Image 1: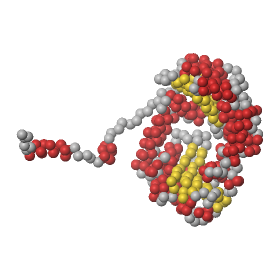
Image 2: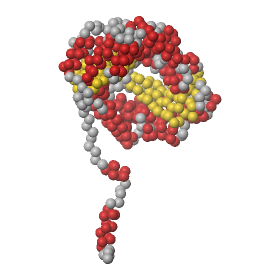
Image 3: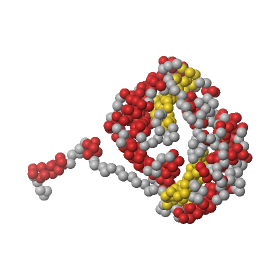
Image 4: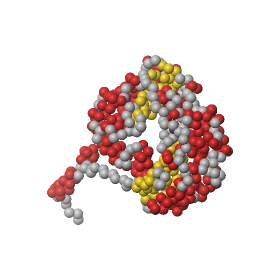
Length: 479
């Protein structure tokens, strides 16, 4: 027979149940005490070869892999204007056009046989070459990589293939509104400056020839311009001996490049319309960014301001909250506040909006850019931006290759080796008042260039309600 349950026993059972009732999860999260994050990645060793080339070394024997990263401190914008189009395809041809001792097919077979990764890229102001594979094939990896850089064949059949591919890209350049928007924006904001060009023209394609590619390659990838990084499974002494051998006989860079031409951004207010029969309007508005990358309060505050406006804050950003969530004008809306170590870059906000809400969206976006100076952000807003930046920044240093690549970037940009530490401290020191102040100083909604790509007949109101409109025909977009 089961024993009777007494009242005292019931009370004894009930009391712990009451004590275990769940509390507010938000209060529990707020009460958590998390120690500050201290992130100290390993520091690559810097060595200078006998020819003056700097090499950053970071050994990591956890996996039998080797990564070699090479950065050239010059790019396509340093070429004469007549070779700009050649410069943008010089990297492709270095990889696919063979070498003076190897045919294109032979290069492909070596890469496949040894399971190598080979990548070359020319950029506006810097260019890169990276080679990676199993460390037991170190000699094969380095020999092939340096052969591609030093002795490009530029096979005529591959030149013709690249010319045909570029011709097709030119033919289809106006197929998508995004392509039209980007090219039109660069032309309106920067004119024909090399930094604003994106499309190789038929006249430039007609000038594609092996000797013109060789002239360009010899001046971008040459010892005076290079900084090297090696990471992974290697021995420092043996690696340095290999690099000395590979650079032997490779002379100074030939003359012929030029300094970057000064950038002059267009000034507003100005409204430009590119008419295109699409059911969504593409909008971009902005002006010169004003700030430079550096250990300054303005730079760090601008980074936080951009995050909160639309550069990374997701649904917490003002643009996404108001233009998408509250108004339903757009699915995609964002901001970009770029900066460079050498000069100011550009600020702009962009969106794809419903055609019948075009003018309303332009007005709202312009107002929200201005609100960064008139509606102060909160301490909670700033903390969100800081935590996001700090917590995501460490993922840029997940392995030895990424750590070395960061150091190469800092060296080329003229930043100190401990820039990652200075950057995090600078972001963490930003205050709400600094965000408002930097917006007042550099964001000018009444002086923006506004570019609209869309179908005026479908707009909610005439675009002239924003201001005087300049029409830019699609076919007049040069690059």
